[in-house]
Length: 315
Image (cartoon, rainbow, N blue to C red; front, top):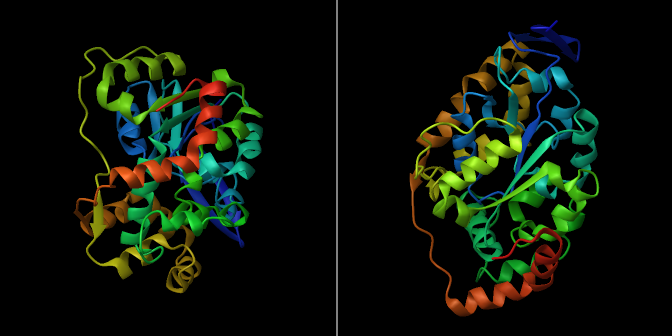
């Protein structure tokens, strides 16, 4: 019998979770890579009748400690009550490089289906670099290639948020990260897709996802899908940092001051995502010169070699 009403407790205050199956596990995760088309992938999966996606695209339950400490009831509260969905899915692009979270996920659901979207590593790193500069995570270096020199100690950075925001080259070491996941989850539980495949063979990617998840392909699936999360810059960078930075003192004060049910309503209303959208305007990033691409690719040579040998993926 499904438990559709649950409570968890934090500092003596109760959170109320309304109309969600507390005993039904999430069984599919998009874990990254960030800046590789995961928002478009989410849009594709969300349209399938057999898939129930979390109310917000990315739920950082396994990757952010204070959210994980709230327990499974918190995680499950992001799902409305559905009678027949076969797949419950969420996304968290921090996870690909978050080795600490892998065992957490396995303990939660050892049968979890893991979906990974991979992009040419140089293009992904460059996109990540531009995003971080434009959104105020760090100042621009003299060149994109200079960011390699800033990442020597990034693997030791304890904050997964910081690793994600400034580890542009590190985040594109796909074999390094996937190898950690394959130590815990069998390879048949990991589906590797590519951004190029998403662009060139949408129907093929839809069929692969459906087969992987054990659901029927949607009849009449389209040949194209609108690009999601296109290149953008914030209109007001300081305000965007306030929205994004969980350690902002004002945000911490608000988290303490607001009653739990108010915070819950804000999270589940998607109002924060709407504010993000209103504060963004489209832009075009400066393209890399060919010599820059070639120089950057040297960083990935060994990782790409092992990626081909162990996972049969190449760019």
